[in-house]
Image (cartoon, rainbow, N blue to C red):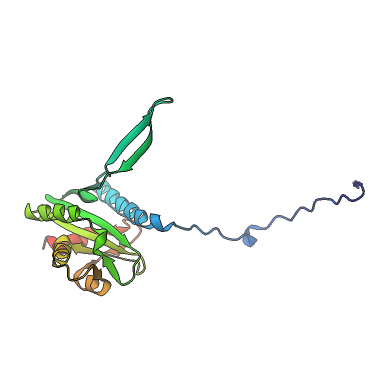
Length: 200
């Protein structure tokens, strides 16, 4: 059936649907501020895997939040709060009777890891862990190189106190750190390296 349009009115052109093969693939972009969180998520998945297999029990410490105000009109809802300065490290737990305490850090810089990323209270906390016989280390994620290194906390503490540099060079970390194998499950299998470095 033919449709007659009023003078001056043109029919709306409907573009033909694109086939699935012609559609542009969606690219998911990760905001710069979330890259460290992605690394943290991978460490959480690794720890969950270890717990499922009964290998160890490592948990993430919650970040302390200071609540300023709460709205109770439709049930309690925090309307204003801020993160307090974290006084200790990200993770702690037990592995084969040993106390484990470590911090996970991520950097986008290619050539060095800034020591400014480590607050003094974390250094002080890890010094106490080592003093009491615990195992303390850092997991450093180099985004540009797509590598993760385990660094004993004692090495970073010494570097921190010497204050010869404001950052640890990438090549220095490669020389003194231990590369963590990346995989699917777990994402970063750090237990074999932990055993090699601290328990042999």
